[in-house]
Length: 136
Image 1: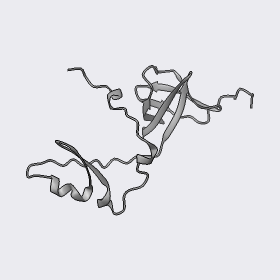
Image 2: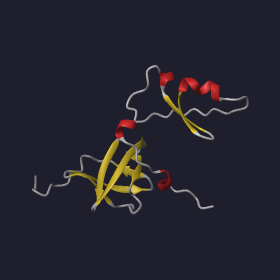
Image 3: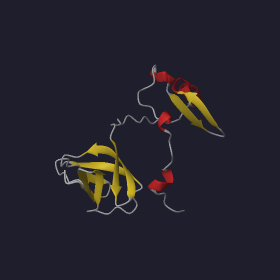
Image 4: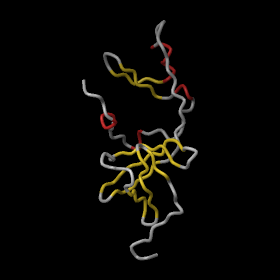
């Protein structure tokens, strides 16, 4: 069986389907039940889905609002900053990034760019500005 790649899990998600704030009350948060059929439920329905011996895994990660768009040549690359490291490098997830190699320049705007540091890492140094095409 071939090993899955990150691209296998890529899908389009309309902005209006993304939660920007926690549901109030929290028990009203949406829940997709996967079984013989897909069912839209809410978190308050969770106890009725669990059986003795089931294992419930809770994901308590925090998401930071750090979505960036960069260019590598003509290609648009979506960057999600995931976690900062002590050395100033961010662990980052990139969309449309199959051909990015360490040392490639990622251009975020006409005055800000950075180099791709290596596997899933970029160093953000906003003080390293590049001149605009008009020389400003």
